[in-house]
Amino acid sequence: MPPNHPVGFQQVGENRFREVVGFCYEDLQVGVVIEHRPGRTITEMDNVLMSMLSMNDSPLHIDAAFSEQGEWGRPLVSSLVTLSIVGGMTARSTSGKAIANLGWDRIRLTAPVFVGDTLYAESEITAKRLSESRPGHGIAQCRTAGRKSTGEVVLTFERSFLVPTREADPHRAAGY
Image 1 (cartoon, rainbow, N blue to C red):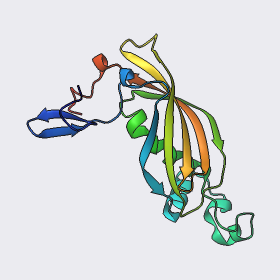
Image 2: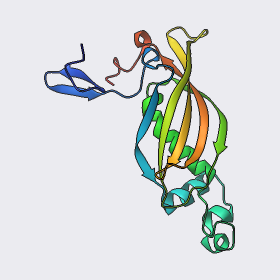
Image 3: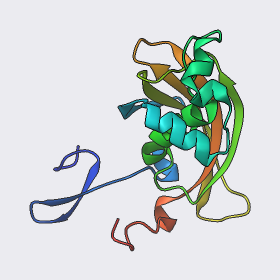
Image 4: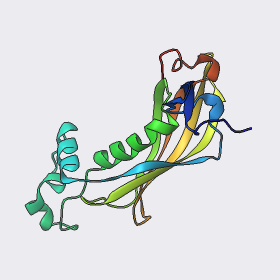
């Protein structure tokens, strides 16, 4: 029988609900695809600020006059910006309860991203297993694609992360 409250929330009192962030190990099912929302429109500030924070000062990303002379005719959004934004979109749901991010693999940049492009992401859970070294935890893996609003894939990567089992989940005790 379905819960007597909105999905994605836990009841914490009469007519009172708390939003649930992320999944425990048991909730992650191989083959499930999660569409991450909201999307994010890339701004010039995103590109310049994050390029400078990551010390990627290539004129290809931050100098419009230089970029006008190049292949794209305008600044190309740094791949570090794209990876950060798409990766961040996935964190709330896939690894919202994660104890640790364990690794990023097979990062591929498949199309250019420019200021004004709106990005969306989706992740497929590709594998999971209980941790051998950390009782009460499991390791999950997902494959993520970042797409422009046009549907064009601009980024793909695989990621693994450590999540608690329901029994070991610290979120409830912490009021989450």
